[in-house]
Amino acid sequence: MVVRRTLNKLRTRSREDRMAIAGWIAIVVVVVLFIGWVVYFFQSITQAPAPDFQSAVNSLNPNGLSQAYASSTQYLTSTQSQ
Image (cartoon, rainbow, N blue to C red):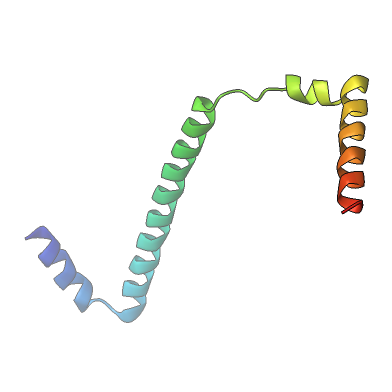
């Protein structure tokens, strides 16, 4: 009942007024969706496991670099010989 009465009042207004109301409704919808996305995004960040930085430290280890170099050269020589 209230919605029907409001729609009838909107129909009697000028086109500019209806466009302004539609614009505000669109802005409100976008803001609500953005706030919902922000809440979901930050909750998913807080629930995600912390990154493992130890593997990054190990990759910078000189032994790790020499092992990576040896494995890459072994791979390259095996592909070149075929």
